[in-house]
Length: 121
Image (cartoon, rainbow, N blue to C red; front, side, top):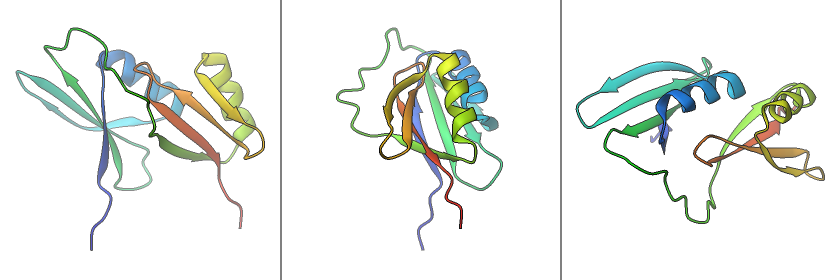
């Protein structure tokens, strides 16, 4: 059986990205691989085995072209109002869909992250 392991975003500034993911989503580094050409930092939310891999290519000289950006990562949150307020204060909200009760934030490289209310059963 296949299981999700991680998803990757290439980042232009690792320190800026680590600060964003910590502040905006509460993610923490769980593993780091550093070599001459690149650095990988895997971030986790403490709830499972899935992680977000941030890849920093040390010889990269310009930001990434994300094309049309027709992909995103999604997170659930219990308190949508508090999360949205925090993200608005950070200035990272890029799209709100009131009808669906969701919104999107963008990281320092322009990757979109969907914020979804946690379903109550």
